[in-house]
Length: 433
Image (tube, rainbow, N blue to C red; front, side, top):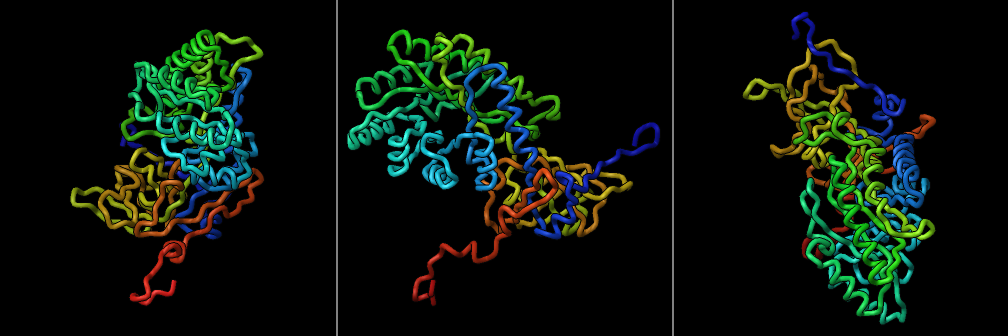
């Protein structure tokens, strides 16, 4: 209550992408993930445009681990995105979605022999992560009598971010130079690119300029000292979405950089490239969260209300952290779908799991909500589907809303057979499957 005698007002939201939430729940059940195709395409185009306005050769690669649904991946591929994958499983998924090896960026510390061989022979952008992988690639090249192109993943220090030195070859201590010498001495591989990935949910754009300058300086040395002309500089991902980390004080509209701000810093670092204009390497970004997060919403239903021992209101909904994994990281927006004039109060919003850490929202200002009423949780488009689990509850359906307001199922609600399909019961336990 303020000095004018007016209490806080909680907003409500009854539709997603112009479609009534109740109609979607009636069609697909609750809980339900809803993706907005128009936002998916608009975010991709906005980032691509921000980059091509500043640098002539740009390729965006959709990060498969951010959301595995084939329908989502194919939307990005329709827009022109490459596939960025970090395992054999993801590589196969990208191939099944129509990507040629040449349209795949293959990252990660473990690449199985079959997909690594196919990737090398087919012209994928294979990023070497360690010396053992370099040796594996040389053996594959020798076995097949070819000299495939590879890139080297770098790790480096910036003044504003923790160093991700688990992946790749360190640039600051000379390990990256050693990797180049080793690769050239072997004579089995061609070095055509450099790769760096600084981290995740990066809010300080200065880190991108600092890292890019270091990568560019290394690329310039390779050209001047070794005669190596690179065709690709992959500067990774890590762009933040308009979500809000639990540790984040300011709201996202004040703390999350725009695509233009990210692009300015990236291209500022590239300005020192000592390459002729007609030989400039392609700038690749591996983006996921910043493209998809705002496109996803989760509708969930109140199943119980209670008072906690300390007097706070507790509310139980039908979606928990098994479905909404990012609730561990973010202060998601929780909004009722029905308007109300009832005063809000701090509310603990729990999921249906029998574990105390199943908290969807911590001290969220919400009005009283009756059993059966809905709320929307946003933005939730990144990582929840790929990291969800069949723990206590099965996984919900996912629908896609098209720009014309039509909607379609892109993953059905799971049934018990989905959980047990891969099991084998031995004969002495009465097994028949």
